[in-house]
Image (cartoon, rainbow, N blue to C red):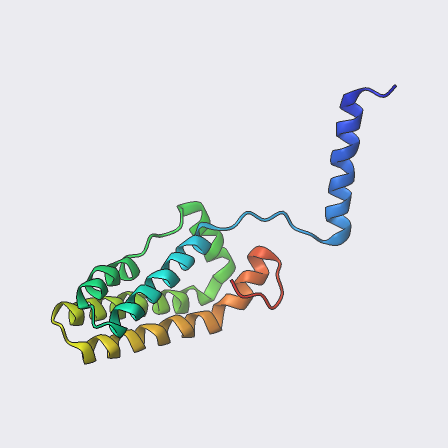
Length: 150
């Protein structure tokens, strides 16, 4: 009878070979993934606030986008390594997101519906520009998924 330790060793070795043979990756999501999901939810809250002219809701939610959490330092370093010379453009998009979310919040505080809508349109454009430039290669690099949208 084989010892249980050999069984576990063989099971682990087989699993490693299976992952290697299939090219599968055991990837833990980056903190940035949850940050982006939360930003998406907050964008939806603002859309709802605009549709109901709930300027207090927009004013309260806009800073959650403007001052969104940052990934841990080690993750930032991995992202910066991947971005390389594109990091400047990535930061420009993030700065525009910050600026336009603040503008939407300020317009909401003033109960300026047109100002909120204009700032929110610019905010959406900023998000779209960043995603269209960086999302696909980012997802492929960090998650090994081709043509995936996270």
